[in-house]
Amino acid sequence: MAAQKSPWIVHLVELLVCGIPAAVSMQAQVHSSARAHGRQQPLPRTQMGYQHAIEHDRTTLTCSYDSRIGDWLKNICNPDLSYCDACAEHCNADPHCKYWWQNDDAEGGTASGDCLLYAGCSTTRTTSRTGTTYSKPLVWPADLERWAHGPLFSKNSSLHHTTIKSATGSYDLTVAAFDTWEDQGVSGELNNGAGWETSHIAYLCDKFKDNGESGNFLDVGANIGTFTIPMADCIQHRGGRVIAVEGMPPIADHLAVGLLANNLRNVDLYNYAVGAPDDPKKVTMSLNPVNKGGSAVKGNKPFTEMSDDQLQDLFHPGNKQKRRKSAPRVIVKEYEVPLTTGDLMLQNNPAMKAIHVAKVDIEGHEGHFLQGSQELFSKYPPCILTIELIPEWLERAGTPVEGILDMLVGWGYTHVPTADKFRTQNHQSQTKTILQLDMASCLDRVAKYDAEIVKPMTNFSDPDALSAALAREALAQELDGMLVRPGQ
Image 1 (cartoon, rainbow, N blue to C red):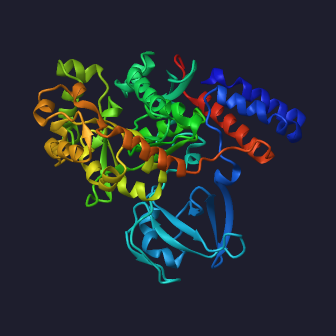
Image 2 (cartoon, one colour):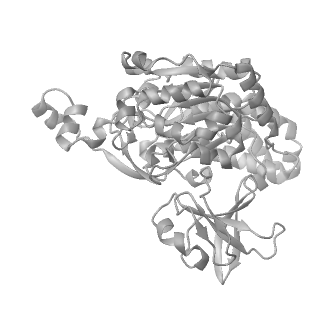
Image 3 (tube, helix red, strand yellow):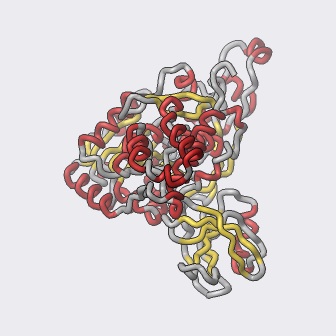
């Protein structure tokens, strides 16, 4: 991606030398440069999120405003707010939990408001100030600016620079991979220059083009972004969005930094596990020590419940004495991760009504996700669905494959294999792409809802918008340069 950034450097130099008026005159050139390089047009300042201080009860709060949501999002939990006291202790211990600060005065003035519960706090609360009862948490995408200075849960040295080919142009896209020893699967292939499922990604991108280029891409189990990043690049030119779900915090670090390093702003990243409505609000996820894409909710795979000796035998097969002298000892790290459902995401993100293509690959938790996405799949099913279904893992998770296949058939999918066929195939063959039987009606519905979504565009005649666009490109170059190169 770095090779494609030189036009932005030229514009940045001209901005600094000539000043804002000269930069504004470059509107057409900047716009065409961004299009030529497959870039998402950055959001205007009022849609980016910026810092604003408000006072309430002699307490100063630091908030972010995001007009895509339309209200105040509180960045930190503050136990001094009496009407938020039910959530304060929980939120202080949980970086994923936020309050929802609803602004009472859209024009400014007195910024009084109510604290609604968000992301992991209790699902029902009556505010002491107004007596209003809210019955469910609000689920919003992560603020990517949190990763503007690098990873949150990992060391900078764990992010390695790799690239994959764009499916729409002759340029590369950056992926922040792991070291090959830590991730012998996806990262190992990328570090060796082999790419990852490039033909499958090209197929999905071509389907968007062939089917009218409407709608969005849902990536449940986004990993480090080998599907999310090229698909965001594929559909960004017409305002398409990617809804990416990645619950494992260190993996989400790599994904978020990769998105910023490519200056891709058409991705909604949900840093949650996903499951059924009656699942716990938090789950334990086990980080696979040698294959990050194989990380799973604890219990879904055998390695998540093994003893230390069993882990060494599993990941270092062969002579035990030799292994113990030379091979690094593997450790399975565990993370408590907030859980949401597909239907809660649907209620707060209109892009979910217009899913053209979806990929679901969450290591045995696919059944739980489908159970928590009944409204999504019954009313707004993705027209094309790629899903991994490993019977052994699904049964460990309490969702036998037979029930999942019945749900998929009931939601109008065709080419759904039988359970017996799944059980006789190897793991690679247990990932299937299935289609809506009435594809024409599905595509018409996607186009209808897609047309209703407001797609933000940058007004380059606004000096502030131009400055913001250049700042985002500068941040992309900075993060891309931070990634570890071969030989470093």
